[in-house]
Image (cartoon, rainbow, N blue to C red; front, side):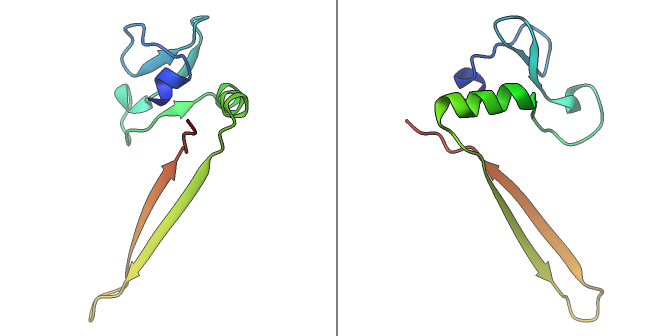
Length: 87
């Protein structure tokens, strides 16, 4: 949905999305490199899109700490993010 709203398209290069000028705007580096799956977006293009559409970014950071008896403390952190879409 975000890719469509930003007017991006796929040109056949796996994990890459381009604007109507053929400029690379967003990509998933895990397609070609080891690491977690993610979407990296050109900051200038993304903030312009947010401002033009009246959107804001909301970051939610959730965390939990568990201590198991007789064991060293274990930490579990869960990270989520959200782009509220106004209709």
